[in-house]
Image 1 (cartoon, rainbow, N blue to C red):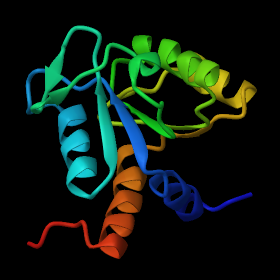
Image 2 (cartoon, rainbow, N blue to C red; image 1 turned 60 degrees about the horizontal axis):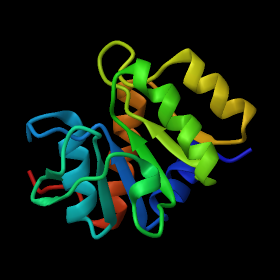
Image 3 (cartoon, rainbow, N blue to C red; image 1 turned 30 degrees about the vertical axis):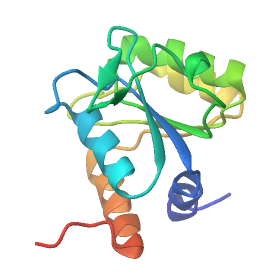
Length: 148
């Protein structure tokens, strides 16, 4: 069984990543994640069915509308929406999903987690302190951590 660091490294080794839940309001967590991935050299795609442009980039209504698909998805939506997104991931053959965990449940839904387990989708949804420590570790390795 891979360690958390191995799993995080595997997820971040993917070059085409969608961020579901980006907003027209740039201060949202999903937008921060989107900008960080884009600024770190990933080919990243914003997903929001109610927006056509986010952060100056074309926004897609769903994963199926992204040209040539993606390798991984960060879910930064409400838990109620996460279930539909993981089902779309399974339909599209996307096996790497990161459910953003913030205060409370974040994007994590028990139904989405169970669906991922049943469909061999590698997922991350650890509590905020562990997830942020892992992300910090990876960003330190890749030079993507902002200088303080």
